[in-house]
Length: 131
Image 1 (spheres, rainbow, N blue to C red):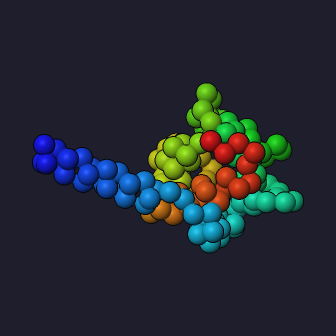
Image 2 (cartoon, rainbow, N blue to C red):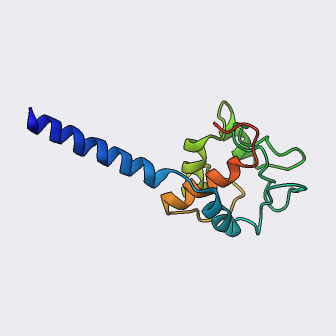
């Protein structure tokens, strides 16, 4: 019984540790988002640039969220039936061209999972849907 209790305690500690590592910090995300600002804006008065503005991206359908932005056909097709949530953003931000073949996004991606979590937490501040 002691072995089972110890094993459960270790499993719980590892679970908490993993969750803490992937919890996003919006303050750190603002710093990471500086890598994105060359193409994207977010916040009050954000406009489409080389890439779409990122307000209200959380919960939106990929390929249509930014009114007036001309998305690639690849993004429009890929986005059918999907929404930008933590999982889809995480996968896309890790490897945009690998996830959406033919995307216009030239960025190589954020390889650090914590940086991706932080950027997602930052974007949630500018989205009505927080998912």
